[in-house]
Image (tube, rainbow, N blue to C red; front, side):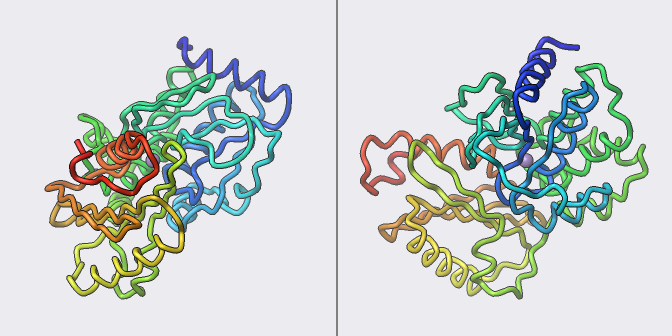
Length: 315
Ligand SMILES: [Mn+2]
């Protein structure tokens, strides 16, 4: 048992003694959010702490991946109550009422939250962080938990291609997948998550949607992974993003186009005043590691509510 797992488990034990302890991922839970909740439930269960997973609107991929591991997404869905104590996985800003006891996350921020237990570290997948906590707490992680962490890693890092993958984690994932006889072709397909570009632009514009609150300003981000973007399609998608931004009242919309085959990311920032700025990365950028920390600094760094600014404010 390490100092931090002692502390985490003691906090969770206290919270569970006083009411319902809920483990949750971000809204529109992706595979990593869902799997990290499953491993967190495992950690707490091994320590004899009752807790329940509550997911909100898990995406299709999360549902598929959960099913592969014998977990029914429907059973894990529900509503978070004001009186719940919360353990946040794969995010660090609560999206629902409730008292946050702990967060375990791999989205770096210059503005960490102030909960009794905060663990935000660079990692390819949050599920890997929770796997390490299981091991640190002295519980054998077992093939099933390890396989869930490997699957989350493939899926959360564009099949081990994303810049957020720390050194060594890709090799660990490949070796472990091999050792456990996992279906790496399936993992790679899920990880690349190449979008069906025949979908309407209005749908492509909303893929992978996440909302952020940066000091009271709402930022929305969506992303498409494809090796088949055309100029025409891109213009149509950006027109839909522009319309969605206008309807949303958000302060900024960050649209990401990842091409995992050619190995680049284009970030398009759309502002309510009509400006549009593109940042090109000559690698598959990570929304959590490369994009949003800079956007957060940019949004929080503004000292008044005007929409002015842009390139000069960026670092
Ligand atoms: Mn994640």
